[in-house]
Image 1 (tube, rainbow, N blue to C red):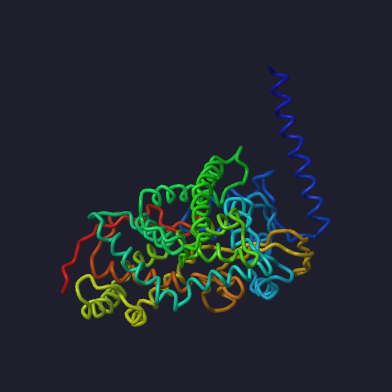
Image 2 (cartoon, rainbow, N blue to C red):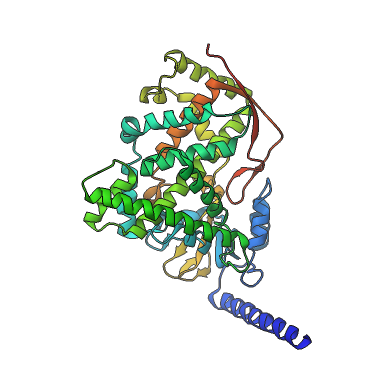
Amino acid sequence: MAAVFLYLVFSVALPAIIFIVHRSSRCRRLRLPPGSLGLPFVGETLQLISAYKTENPEPFIDERVNRFGSVFTTHVFGEPTVFSVDPETNRFILQNEGKLFECSYPGSISNLLGKHSLLLMKGNLHKKMHSLTMSFANSSIIRDHLLVDIDRLIRLNLDSWPDRVLLMEEAKKITFELTMKQLMSFDPCEWTESLRKEYVLVIEGFFSVPLPIFSPTYRRAIKARTKVAEALSLVVKQRRIESESGEKRKDMLGALLASDDDGGLSDEGIVDFLVALLVAGYETTSTSMTLAVKFLTETPLALAQIMEEHEQIRAKKGEGEALEWSDYKSMTFTQCVVNETLRIANIIGGIFRRTMTDINVKGYTIPKGMEDGRTTREQHAQQMCSLPFGGGQRLCPGYELARVELSVFLHHLVTRFSWTPAEEDKLVFFPTTRTQKRYPINLQRRDRV
């Protein structure tokens, strides 16, 4: 028994020792930025996760900046990574997108999204599919086709609310239902709610070590992703049959199927594409909804002003009458609330790029194929503005849609309810920015005035 135990320890320890020695010598040979690669395989992932589960995740960055400088090396989510919080370096990265750097994310995210997701596409294919996606979420499409369903589904959800809700959970239901409608023309049902619950597990696995043996979270996420892909594959196959028989639908899936005539995606590629768009529409907008309400609750003057703006809109409409595009365009203070919410609490704390060739930065060499993690807080400082939806060729294609959904949600919330926090809640920043307790609130319905 003792011999077996010693063998197991040796079999684990020896590769670990070789791994550490190899990494250290490679760092010296390449003259990487200084830093610590942490434990074998896991790196400093646990320290990063621990920091981002608190109200103040900055110490993970600040401690390393103080020790190593504004550009430092670490090892997170399964890969050696260079972090940059240097404005000059970040500007250099932005200016050389597609030339020296390409979009890349940790294996945990890449594996769960799928190789055909918009987030991971590059070159001409990304340009084509990004343009296609934006064409289904531009102002004219929202005005003429999507707004009526946005208004209807939000009102339908709020009608069912009890006197106490977990606001973030309710917001996620709303945004998932909206995204399912916009992408595949599905109204809410048991099937969509079952699919949403699997998505929760998928998203939880995004920022985990991509090793199923060591990470139960990642293992659950992979299983959930398989279930989601199987469910969406059946939908895609059925819709393809309908499309080939001449039945067309004006939604995102219909456009993806039609794009086959011009070298489009396979069924597997369409599923990957839909998986990523569902994640984007579900997680980010629902968080913005929750945080907007939280910040308004903590700022009585702003809450009073936004209520006044929406009561004026409501007073001009009949009972149950839907919002129109002109109503949305009149929500000037609401847009200030949206902008400030996105500025204060960026949903994603940083972005990843991979070097396409050896890069010289501040006297160091970042080798080809290495991850560069760029934090958004320094990006904002360098440009003196907030870029919550990114920019350039990677501008979020649903940025205007997200604004409309958030604005319509705030309209119906403030004109139907008054509320108070049910208990104290606080922001945490892992795996994304959110409230720790999903923001429980007590509701009181308001009579129409």
